Amino acid sequence: MRARVVYESMFGNTAAVARAIADGLRTYAEVELLCVAAAAEMSEPAIDLLVVGGPTHAFGLSRTRTRRDAAEQTDAPIAVDIGIREWLDAALPVPRGSRAAAFGTKAANPWWLPGSAARGAGKRLRRLGYELADDPVDFLVDGMQGPLAQGELERARTWGERLAHTELDRLTNRV
Image (cartoon, rainbow, N blue to C red; front, side, top):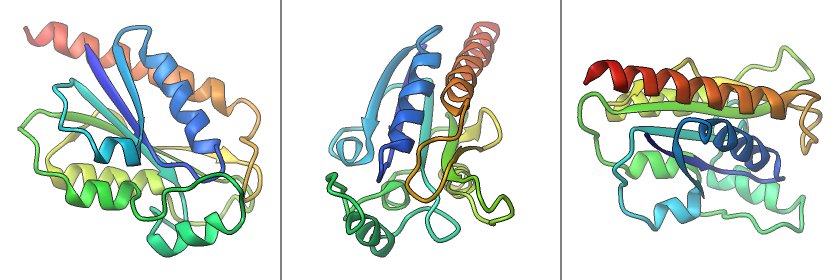
């Protein structure tokens, strides 16, 4: 089975979650891990599962403005012109039966804060014609810039492993 994980990250938290998910997927799959800027430069792959994730900004997927705001808060290089929102909006519809999953990071406190990049990515993936392999999943970050809440990297790795196992079973039983 082949999987591609595409992520957007501002402060490194979503990138860390994406790596953990990719590690979990690798138990059953060949995995390619790409930041969204690199994915935008590549052709559409022949894969069995696409996993997409980004940080929650202003109650959903980031926008150019929110990425600029984040870039002002860190010395780390941030791709301001492209994020998961723009990458998915520019994607072509996919063949029926294509599978995907969505994840995001969001602030753990306040716990009641609405919005989710994971849900936004999931909606866009469905609009493109993907069947979601699982409900969109949020991983929690302490504060605006992190770090990740305790146990979230292990939860991400476990989720990736479960996704891969489920999809491999689905592919095996389909043959």
